[in-house]
Amino acid sequence: MATILYVDDEPINLMLFEACFSDKYSVICAESGQEALSIMDQNPKINVVISDMKMPEMNGIEFIKYAKSKFPNLPYYILTGYNLNAELIEAIDNGLIIKCFFKPFNTEEIEDEIN
Picture 1 (spheres, rainbow, N blue to C red):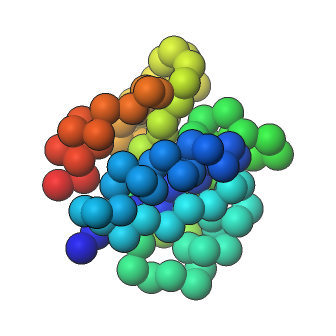
Picture 2: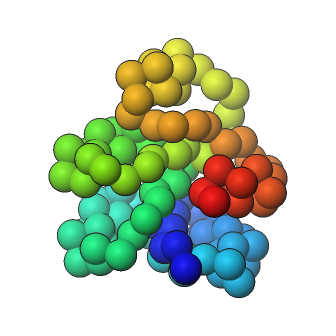
């Protein structure tokens, strides 16, 4: 079973994501980029990282830049409630993230990508 780390500053989004995917994946949630980095240091079983874009202190791209410098072989994705912008397009073009998912998310789209 794949282990997904999902990062979002809103507890309701974390609960929703976990409810939608915990039957097929092991889901670990973090409320900030800083918390997610700590979890990644302690959990070598993480297979996929999905992060919200708009978060206080450190946005999704900033978090993924830090995470990817330490864990370069993991696939990283952004899940956002906003439109694709220049920063996200650049992150995809530069290979920082594989893809951007949009809220409300489509569970099949995310499962297809993970599988």
